[in-house]
Amino acid sequence: MKATALLHLLQLASPTLPVGAYSYSQGLETAIEAGRVRCPATAERYLVRQLGDVQAPWDGAVFWRLLAACAAGDNAAFAQWNARYLASRDSAELRAETVQMGFSLTRLLVELELLPPAVPGNTAGDTCFPAALAQAVHALRVPHEEALLALLFSWAENQVLVCVKSIPLGQVAGQRLLLALRPAIEAAAVQARALPDDELSSWAPGLARLSMAHEVQSGRLYRS
Image 1 (cartoon, helix red, strand yellow):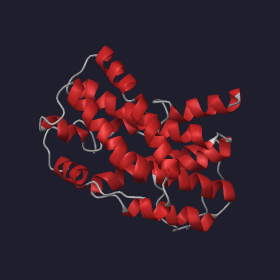
Image 2 (cartoon, one colour):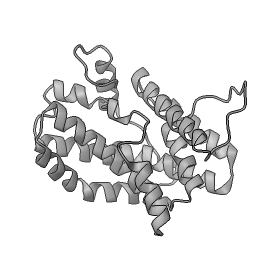
Image 3 (cartoon, one colour):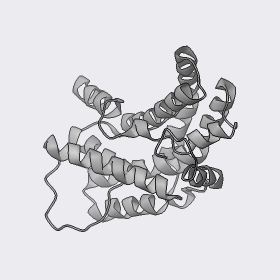
Image 4 (cartoon, helix red, strand yellow):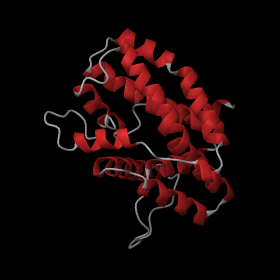
């Protein structure tokens, strides 16, 4: 991987990327409130399960297809996978999260002159965050395998940060947890790349229930 591409990837994966990822927990705040995630061991089990059941067979796999569509210039496939990802959001919060982050990243790409300005009056629909990130990866010529790992790592890093703040865990425990997730992140990337279209799945009823419960949870710190 060339230095230029690596630096671009580090910028896209940075917590300072102004897309608001830090303000979302994706239902984890409710899992912590309910006592299902309460220590490093339970946090690790929860996140490893998420990587295997959600991130690999859906988020990562869809992102992989969005990357391929960008590389091939296949606008129809890109729009189809974007629409499928949006349709897979099980709660209002989860849909609002990906739409807001997708909008923020798309606007940033336009301001950085990596994407052309939107056509006035265009009503093509919302852009999910994985689709906007795929456009950024394509524009900056970042290798796809590394980009997929970065997507999964960024998700894991944000979830660990929620645990550090809300369980709470210490900073060292948080870093130890992130290190422990490395094998699961690598396995999720391999699975996401290998799955055929008819084996993709976003079936995660437990996560959907947590997200819906979060919508009526009092004293929330996060937006999802």
